[in-house]
Image (tube, rainbow, N blue to C red; front, side, top):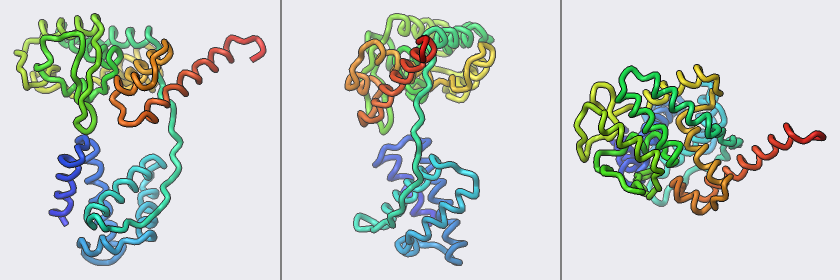
Length: 295
């Protein structure tokens, strides 16, 4: 079974071009399913065993996972991963048992205001222990808010992007590339960081470096944001990804059309972008309720 699971990892990473995090999560699900079936069926599991999995088995597996404390969203993702694994192991003609997943209520993104976004980035930059680290953090957060990048996309940038122009080529999910415009303020922030960074800029090496010269970790950026939002009294929903939500919401509020916004964000489906129309409507309702004398 180790060979089969490894083959699925290879399929996800290279054929489906899934992200590292997705591959890791799906691999863990496959291993949990195998361990469950060994206990549930009372014996070793093989590819032939997987071909006999029925709806009742999947329901029992999800019940066990529920007892572990996972919510609807995690259960739905677990079921999706299991279906993919069974489909892969069974081949093109495999019949995967149908089981309706839990209903997941899609929450609205929680953007921050433009002033809060700038204040957050400024606080992190000013709190850095060295000037070049402050310049680095300022540049990273401006990329998220000013260009709509995901934190992973910013971390994946290499020295090849220099010298900067008016646009930036970004590699997003599943290896898809897109072109995003660079505001002068964002471009200047990156250029200042490159000048101050004590480590040499190399074309195929990460653009953003950690304190010891290795690749900057997204976890470090998240911890910095967590500290800054506490100092500024901002909501717990103020995360690096919230800056990307703010980029989308503020553009939409200023008249950007959904198709253009979809391209800027790198969404594969327009339905992923349409959620921001609900955010804008929700904001308008909040303004109405707070301002109208009869609201």
